Image: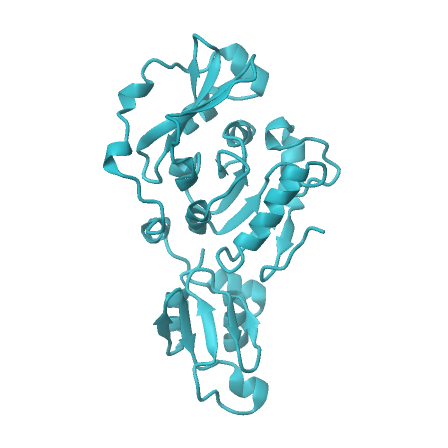
Length: 306
């Protein structure tokens, strides 16, 4: 994430706030056209740093702007761009539709009857005790269900998902719980790269393999509130179900390409090429690392999937 406003101040650009945009005379208009921009033809997104001049069509990212105005390379611009601290990022996040009534918050004692998942279940899924503790994964010993807490962005408990280990059981509790207003694992995200998956157990599997930064959307549907929470990350890698072999995964990924346009600046898609698994939860560490390393970039919102 980039502190767009502070970077504009540092570059000496006289701007005005207009909704989710900052407007100003195009800072590169004279160099590009030979004349000054006498009107505020230039607009930059206050969250992503993506900009465009509607007169001379100058466009790019904050890195482009810094490079062009200071004469440094794009790589040098990436090291000089001003970024907010994680605390500042969190303060800016959920004023969208993430409000959850105090009455919906459940006492932590509601989970007291559940336990740490047994060793046999953890070994079957390839999960470590540390990863389960970090994500708050619990176990229903009576029915042999995984219990995956659903929390507000601030950490308040509003429900959980139950997922059977030996049976095909899946249930959200309570019915109608607003899981679309949070991300599983968001409370332990510490900044940097965020890897977005569908199933809550997948980021637990990744952490068990030493890959941190995983969060889950609790399913294939991703809400605007969840996307807004993702702005706390410097980079987002979507690892939704394998879009090369799974039609639902392809639809979800294409939808993400469209819905994150102009909201998230640095987005890549997990590369499933040569990987037969459906999602990171089924992969060995080498496949997870390869899919992240070769993740496909999306520049200025353009599609990268046919």
